[in-house]
Image (cartoon, rainbow, N blue to C red; front, side, top):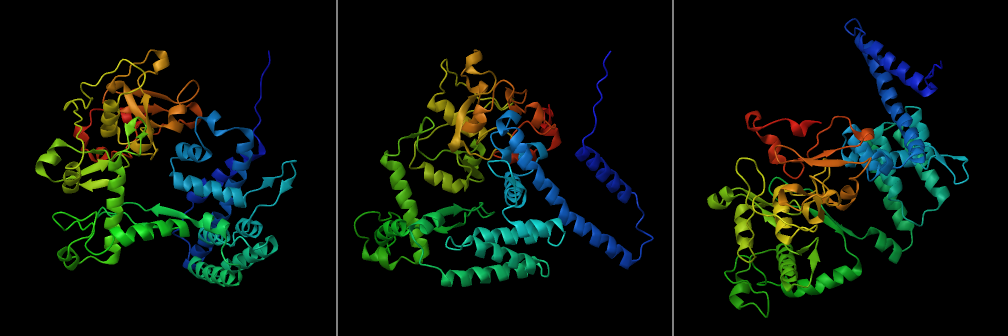
Length: 467
């Protein structure tokens, strides 16, 4: 008879001791401490809080060498973190990025290397700087111009860390901004590589008023293009939504020019709408995921009849119902009908593997985007997935057996990976593989947040809350 004895590793022993120490601290009575003693306890807690991330930074390098995200049932390391610990993808990216620059590294030949931000990692290990300081240093170092050499970069990092040990994050950020400004004055003129690196257009989160903030940098070529377009379509009197018949070609009348009270910024905004609408109506954009490139909006019959409420595009943008009606006046119409009692889609069935355009439109209306929990890819970026049973396993291409899934998530479904099913509430459930299953929600509410606001009596079950 053989008896197998499993010995705890030093790391497991240390973690058990750390948890025991925390439980011991939590059991301590703080009522007897003076304010000076309480401040001393808080000092130690703050130092420990600054140091603990250092231990977290050590693990990802070892984990990435041991396995891959796909073997754990995810499409990326960011998703592994987000699913297992139920954190946002943004927070997962932040932790991974910090681990890359502050954690230990190894060369291709195997020898250990210092962290990329050596001085920052050392100060954090000593508990001299906190997470906000680290973020300011990381941000400043990432924005150093390309002409700064390695020796100077290291000196700048040491200077920032030295400042961080004595000032707050705001003061550190201000000093970093000043340092970057002074560096930029001494550097060479931006070249094509630097311009290409900085180019981009970013759309922020939609605000409560429905407006979407835009910021970014155009290359000289890009701005030259829109400069010419704006000269025509953003001229006074052109593309004015306040006109009964807006002028979009030729020359506006003098009355349209005189009556145009818009600012230059507003005229350029309206010109972009005209450019986009003209491009969509040209028919030259082809198909995207099986449908002609077009705007698809889902709403309810009640909102249309009352002319109140909202519609949601396939990209997740919320649009007031009056704008939906105005946009629909120039568009083809599709009506998606659902059963009032069960919520299942009606009268759209198909006997082949590829979903029809009508079925895609129905799924966009029902799901709003990728149905995998935590995925934010909107309907425009999603594919049709056989959720109830895969086509290779004799699944049917019926609308109530299908769901939307982005390409990477769709490919994660399979043996030893994710599985999907349609529950009694006609919701698509995603069951994670063993390594990522911590009892989290199986249904994605990101694209249909209104469903989380239902009163408890409207819920028919708790199937979406767990296995």
